[in-house]
Length: 91
Image (cartoon, rainbow, N blue to C red; front, side, top):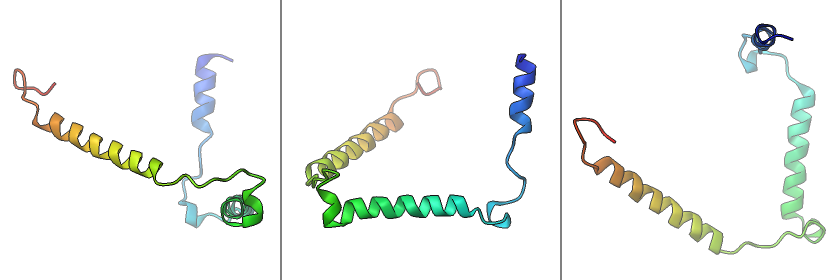
């Protein structure tokens, strides 16, 4: 298959032009999403499922780490906004 043929194939396979809520309901997709959500909820919240899946409480450490990283990112972006320009353009 040549490149032109491959690119034309990609651009001819598109989603329908209608909005998702205007299309008929996809029962397989809905069932799959609902089943996945139910499975994850059962694994996390049912006491009988905690042991087989080795679920442990993460504690406050990861949350504190994420909070510190977001604060550092805010400081870095604030510094970038205050950086002086060179030759009239930002670096």
